[in-house]
Image (tube, rainbow, N blue to C red):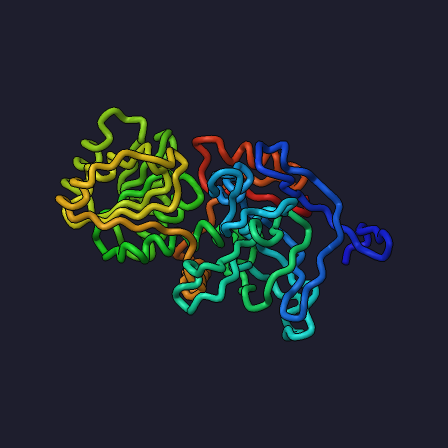
Length: 359
């Protein structure tokens, strides 16, 4: 390991960013802590890049839980916790029961553990997330099960780091609504991490026509490069009419990460028998719903978070084949995690925000 790590009482230390409790970005603290040791089935990964997701911000803010708890498990997050789930790096140490040939591999980490059966890992009661139930990638090193480390799909660490959570979520959303070639899909929050990947996956992997919804239409050309057929602004006073006009009638499906702000519009423009899939609620977590809209239009609704290992492998294959491309907005050094999370919440950015421990 690098000689900059000073031994204190026989331990070797690393730099990390910890969340010390629920609250604002002042709860993020840069600390020096011992480098973790992998157990017999784990590996130690030197983190090269970690992309930011809504998940770690909402975890810090307490948005996932009820009352004073938040996290993916009922007991809530145990603080202090190192956040970060979109991780790439190099394996520098392996556990006793791990193939020694894994040392030196460049890997991307599957973001959660689960005892769920194949195909149901993401809905298992014991699903536990890196960066929430386990210490994550806002650090110079992280330990993780060897069987959840996969070869990077691209040669570059930063480019390979932008897909894990957002990409898996987007891939699973598209799979759930069973998009068929030529169908029209509306993607909300299309300039964000999940949204920009929804655009790419729906259009370039599954052959759908995509109506991308963003705020500032200055991003129209960038959206079309990602595969959008039409790009519209949620700021329009006549958004529903513009969607119907662009498509020549009602649309087949909606992939939503916004929630309340665009929910009425989504139901209005869906065809009879249409499908609505949601994986985020950045524009409002609660909404009013007239159930008659659902049953009179025969709308199917899906809740979606993450996905399966099989889907993760399929996604990595599509990335390696060049069907899905990384979209990166900005990178920050690890010590500027506060600034990075504040920037992440700005509107108008395109793609992912990265933390780079070595910068």
